[in-house]
Every structure is written in structure tokens, then in C-alpha cells.
Image (cartoon, rainbow, N blue to C red; front, side, top):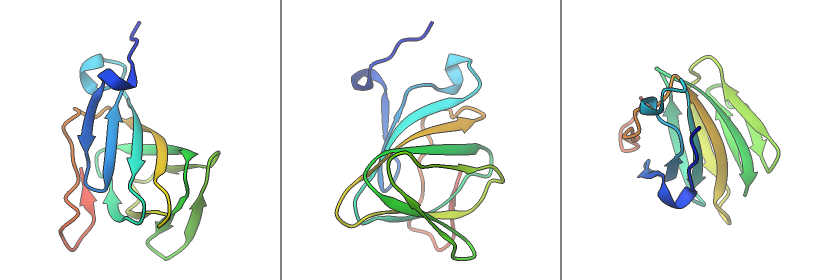
Length: 124
């Protein structure tokens, strides 16, 4: 059994927020669970080429935007799942941070961060 407290888990500044990584590849469960904060007013171009990701909004607001421009509002109680390694934009509202509980499969090593300075989508 694995028991972890948010104060004791690996915390990574992923570029536009913090990712608290509760479960990692080394834990052997096959997936990663994170508590992720997206800083207010940020827009991130993201793509997970090696992982599927599902995110459940627990606080704040924002939107996830598909490449064709379709925007999906994110508020507490809404889940989105990137089941096709979908490139997307993740946008936090200008007035509040967005907080998500995310699952990655397969599991992350734990040290992954995004490069948000490039022209393309940040991927890992």
C-alpha cells in the first residue's frame, strides 16, 4: 500500500504551474497521479506523445482548446481526456488558478517538464 501526503511528494514546476506527482513509474502501478496547478492567465501549448492523460477539474476555471479551435470550458466537476495524444491548449482563467487531478498512462518518471518557449507544442 502506498500512502502519500501532498507535502511529501515530488513537486515539479512544469512551466506554467506546479505538478505534485503522487505516483510515478518507480512505484510500479503503471500510471501517474498528479495534483496540478495551472497559474492564472497562462496559456500552454501541450502534447503528450508518449502518454495518455485525463484531467479532472477540482478548483478554478479555464478551458482546453482543440487544434480546430473548439473550446471546452473547465470548471469544478469537469473531466477531459486526451485519448489520442491530442495536441491542445490549456488555458487558466485570468482571475484564478486552475487545479486539476491528472492521470498519465504509462506512468511518468517524475522529472518531465514542458518547454513552453518554442514555437510548437511542448511534448513528452
